[in-house]
Length: 299
Image (cartoon, rainbow, N blue to C red; front, side, top):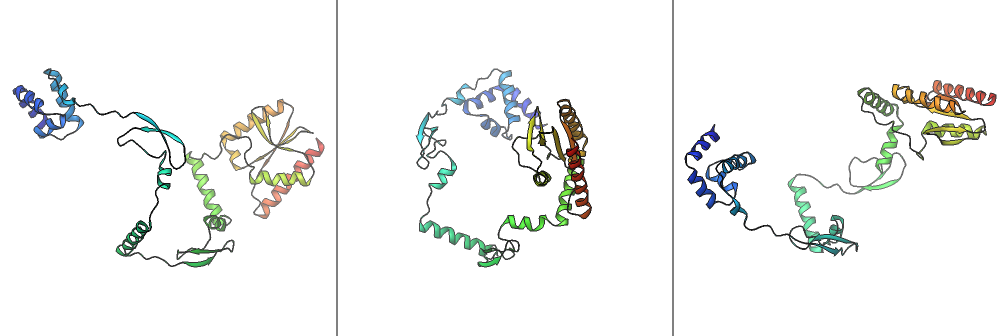
């Protein structure tokens, strides 16, 4: 409503607007004169009026910004050449923030100032600085000097290893993955990449095949597919399937892969993997191994 009243007032006295434009140098000055907030909405309002009454504002920008030329400069830290501006705020002496920070050296005086400012902050915020103490890592047994009052491990790696083998941790990870699968957020089953590290079930079956002197080639590339264990002397493709292979999308992909391999003379043998942390799991894997060995000997 206020803007409409201002428009009526301006249009009733265009000469005042022309005079103010002559005295001003930007839309900001116009907004201040008419007591309007300086924003894009009101700039557009004044532009419509200027176009309607054919009022020129070319005198507002008589002094163009100075343009700095691009120059090539040598970084004093790493010795690399880089492009920068010849002057102004965009001019730089170093090629990166890393080089700039490494070139900044504190004197004893500045170091003492930093130390005192930290102490003042600690006192002001009622915090305390723990004294150093030696701890023995609960996982690997290594000794470590620390200032933390509740530190139990020498590193984050030892901390993770101490809990990842517990049933509670495995259940937590399993429940998280199942929830992600159900909600469609799980992205762990990407496209197979040549040379990727074998999984634990694949490493396990490497030992099984080696112990039974069965020659194989791991991660064999056949057409557009990869075979977990290609036993070429009998054209047997041994596939070790994790729990994700029960999903509809992966099962469809496996069916296409089996059809392609079969059409090209391969005999596909799939073993669904099951955890061997229990006696039932160990017996299950043992039966699967015996079944595969029997299949291999008959082939």
